[in-house]
Image 1 (tube, one colour):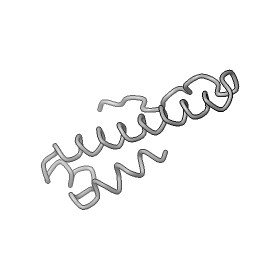
Image 2: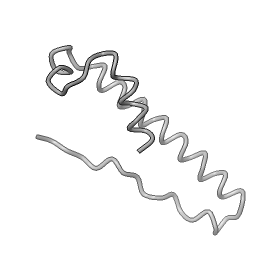
Image 3: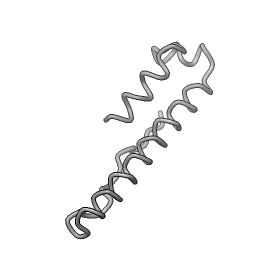
Image 4: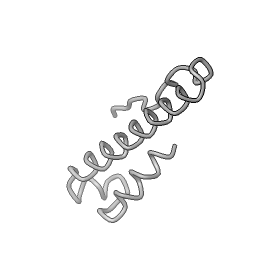
Length: 72
């Protein structure tokens, strides 16, 4: 069984750059979250119905799982 760590490190301290730094950090975090959702959705969509069933999902669950992963 393969596993990987999907937690991101923080993108520097917003306190170092003030408000502009905080905005930039928030934009970077939003783009990273969007990309994580996209990658998860694509990976699950590539699985066959049988493979999805093996992990307890169906096609209707893909969007929910992708969104939930992005929030964690």
